Length: 391
Image (cartoon, rainbow, N blue to C red; front, side, top):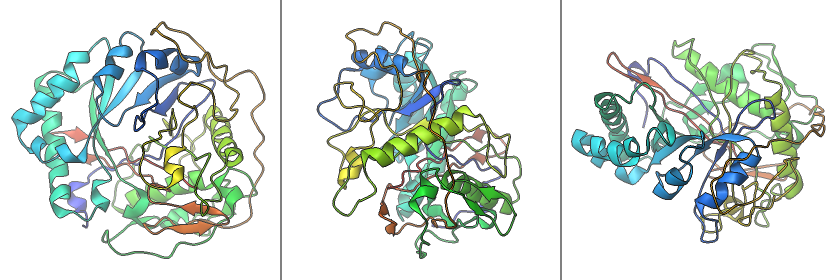
């Protein structure tokens, strides 16, 4: 389904990942598993790594209650299966009262993520429900005087970009069914290691694919005539384990990606196109989730095992799991962050197809990232496009 640009006066794009010793850490808290610790036991673990923001894929009352009075901010999710019912303003208001209002102000809910990757399901009914659902949820927040503290957003994958390289040529797909042939890129460019590339269109130098993808999205937005859109990252990560055809999914690659990303974020720099851009990045993910469907990699994006031990060393001073939600503090240890070298020329075009990249495979739910903001005369709804998971 193509998007009517007249309904997109403002677009916001997000990728997915975030950590830093100096600034607050955001992380995705998925729970598709049967061996995860109780949320109350997770509180000290989250505190010990310096995380101050969590993104849920639902509005789990156990989690929201456990993190009450901790100061941790939450993005709560509303699944695709609820979009149709949210067309009813009364049901939208009931959902907000039950899943948001009743936890405020003790639990710091700051955002509702409505649906997930709706525009790439090629489901016209689902797509047609998205904006009305968001508008009604926003209207419910307004009626409850919560709109100043809780925003509304949605996530899509990078399949909505028809062109992603060079970044300055970034453009949205004219439709969401046409497929493109991905280009090959060196793995070290994805891992923030190597000499980088030069965008022949803008002359800007890119050290890594992460920044290049973000700027490709920004270019696509600007081609629609919107120059001042805020772009943020809601999800990015790397799996530590995969199937036989997922050669890039290793603990070493996961450690390199996330560790180098932490260093990049600690530098508090934007992208070559937007050097002053503040990328509020959320890491994907807190735990490995043993019941997630799909390839093995989908169950191994976690920084921690269910028992609270690190999957690989990122330099955190981890206190581990606890039995209460007593506050603790922590973050990245005082060790030196790894040095980022530079990669040869190359870049991965973002498409909906699977693609092998020097032993790294782009899977469904792999390289994804985009945030869209609908702005109308009456309301401003922020859509955070998410995921930049590459293997």
